[in-house]
Image (tube, rainbow, N blue to C red; front, side, top):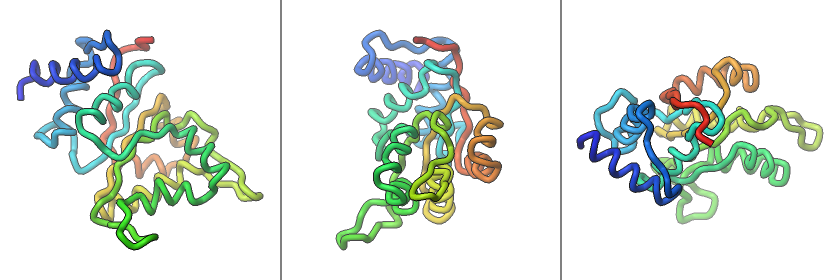
Length: 198
């Protein structure tokens, strides 16, 4: 598919989300690479891995993921801060839901189809406080989810998408070097060009 056709499809889809959506010259490679990735075409991105999208506030990371979800549906987009709030109510069940049990459910209650992992995008990784307390126990909620998803990536090919305005060093400070290394192994790192568009 030509670049022109790709951009035509993306802009048409983007305008359904934001009427004045456009692709800036600096963003063309970003959008083309992601389109070919989601379409599973030959590209510089490894289609077996997930995505780790870096960029400044307001540069369009979340919008681009919403756009590609419309074009190439996947399980869902969830804010990392919403997960932290859910954890405060539901506890470890929320970690299992997005982590080790993040598969299509089987016909028998409590079973999961390991050949059908769910792909989620975790929006704004690092916006929340890393450590949370529950009943006196301190836990790094997003780190635990990433560890589980990494295991499922290795064993079942589970893909994970993340958006963040943090640097790799800041992610390491929040979640530790083991999380940073696993994100590097299971995701294609991509920098969203352009300063804030808000």
